[in-house]
Image 1 (cartoon, one colour):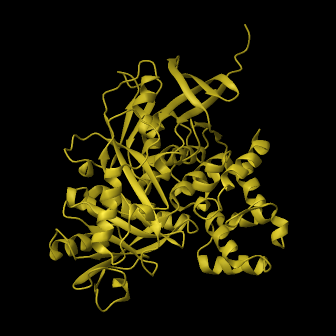
Image 2 (image 1 turned 120 degrees about the vertical axis):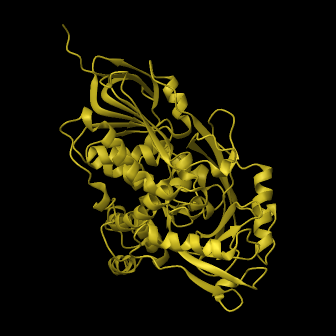
Image 3 (image 1 turned 180 degrees about the vertical axis):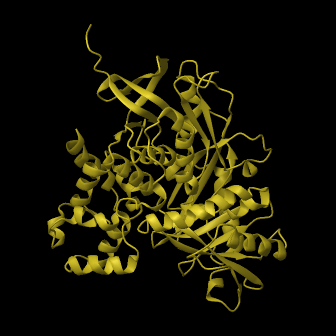
Length: 501
């Protein structure tokens, strides 16, 4: 009988967003073999379309999500410690102007927010008078007070890539532009058909994890005999980016009469990021775009609060994503739980090849979700190691003080522009030397694409971070698409055509 040379893995993960890559990293670090497949680029959809915050979710307290908020607050400080290059503290100003909530209610929520998660490094909430504080500059109405609390910013798509990179360096196989066609149980495992540019192939795996985000139900439909008794509710969230509205490094949390909130956040130095919306998505999962109703809503909120009027013509960029929330049958899309649900399907006797489907979740709790996934799968992998990700730095994050780290980078590359070095240090952390190599001048970095993007960085992203298109580089591995001159994407795609074949 011919030997079966089909590739075999302990775990096949479908989905290259934050949950899929987080699970792949966790599992690979426990000594198991992992294959992760993603139909597009890493973080191509929901995970790069967030408000880019690592936060407890202050507004979720209003819906009684105390456990979720507590877990998220604990994770907020853990993630800050393991990825200090792409995550950093951010102060939020919460004006009581136009607030539909009584001040005592907001302050009580902030008191809980300060104490639920065992806060260690971030400052406690304080109260300011808007007419006496520089934090009130730029607002239309500066009478009254505001609360100032702390959360964290995250480069969301880079968080996904770094989890995938760490997983790969621990032995995982990461296959982008690869689609799961179908899967079936056979014996004590799974047989799956995959398709990529190279054609179709068959792989075997002991367990299958469905972390396909908005496509989670679609993937279940491709799996023979899979149980389909969990529901997913798709909600679209959209953001706009406008020229900078105010001075300062702080963000604003703005309350509307409908009790929804909108953030205004400093973005890429020259801009303000505004979002998000919550609208039901009733069609099949797809690439989302902001709608006219959402644009009016976000602009209306900003014009209500800020002295500078903004119009649709001021929008320099917009993006939208579909959030795959667990369907808890809430009437209001804003009230649908952001908590995650893991559904383990191992047959009626609980001994068949396991299928674990991921519903819901948020970026802040991805690491805990991955640990829970391994707890559910542990009975099928007796030799797997224990939890380890909570104190292990993500690639490039093995330093404690960012300013001191940047100073060291500037000392090592004195002839390169400081703004460029600071941006690269933020993106790549201690791995910046792998990108810069022996470069001593800008000429050593190769072709200049504009906006601070050079061929050396493009080559690094293709070689080490699965980048294949201009969009991968300009809007996911970085946000340089907002800074480069017109025509850069075409020139970059032409360059990449030769680089990736």
